[in-house]
Image 1 (cartoon, rainbow, N blue to C red):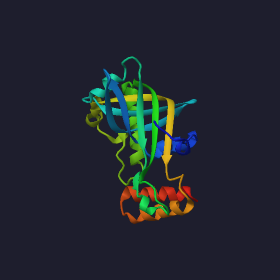
Image 2: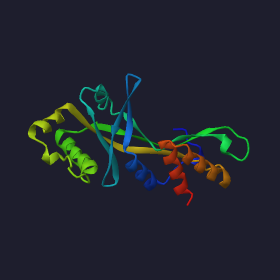
Image 3: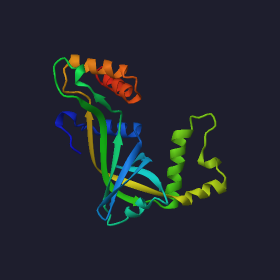
Image 4: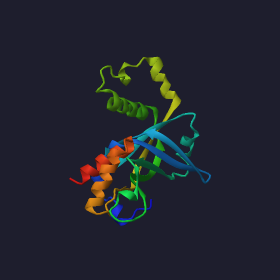
Length: 204
């Protein structure tokens, strides 16, 4: 990923926190030179000193068949809030731009067996359901519903390289930075407001 030095994030713990907060990612692999991508909920786990990303694809999604070919690396892309930045918000003339947060993770992927997949689904459901009034948990499913596990394929990716870029107007003056936040809040768009909040928090 192209990452100018002043936008590069090297704090690994900060990157891990970002991945956990923005866990709906895109997994990219290749099939005979053609890129394939799927957008999926992903989970990050630490085993010993290693980190793994886990998830699953529908069995009908042929991308999973590329995961055991030649033990090749895959790319996982995570994205945070992003928005257009108008240069009309700057004190002096300049060009418009786009602010964003992005993390790229490279690693070797392998397929899970059914036991590993079931354990991963249990964790996934607990994360997104345990706080709800009527949580949908694996242990409460009927045997018939649990058999639907046959329709998905689990995978795990061992983290080998991480790249992160947070382009958040770090190169602007304090007045420009404050003006960007103010105008992003006034946009009344979800992404713009989320980006404004993020920039506001980082400025404190």
